[in-house]
Image (cartoon, rainbow, N blue to C red):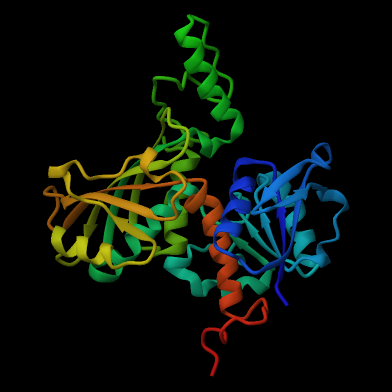
Length: 349
């Protein structure tokens, strides 16, 4: 028997990528149900060489599905994830609604895949913030090698992280500027075309934003609560692909050469690092790829044991859809969801 997958929020940016990633990775799904609000009922969506018709979330019987990949926003998730979980369907949620719930595992499979075993408390697993996911993939092997004390990261986040309306806003503002139309920000507080905005989420009393706070809290939950982290989140006029400038201080010695070797051999990472030949990755280069790319690995001379690097990933993939599908694969590989023809579960005799 293959698995039965439900996708909530199937008509959004991440919903489309979930379908693409499931097809590309040959995920063993016998049935795929695409779900959204009532106004999207009947809308056709592509899944490999098949066409699926969107169904009404409110009318769907989730006992028909084994795993629900959910990407419909925090409010919808807060209402629906417990109902779906109660029907016996494991929820993998892409919103921020459940990430810091102590009874819900927060998973980046390359980093803490074993934590999926804690799913049963609520039958819900959380996907981290898109900028957190790629950062964790890059930091984990370095942390294992030399133990991280402190991280300072500036993120340069694409508009797709805010959703389709934000992508439309960037497009419309860019086009409008060329024909001398007045620019009127709607999704963002300031003009995003030909600009950068150091503002992600809401400002907090300590001067940081909620997006910056997510990076701190999620790093502590996924990787190590003792790591000190300071973040600056910047929205940039890029459609897809998040970039991060990362400075890391370690407890133990580590050289740029050893860091490159570690990163080159680590899962989920593609090291492209030869600045002399202008070999480094930009957001355009990463679109549609599964990897977290690392470039410009060098020593940070401001601390005793320091490394700096540039990290880029497709935020709709590793930051959302791909990570969710990898979590679903963990459920299969560990025998939590049974599938005929798969190898014995990890840890079985």
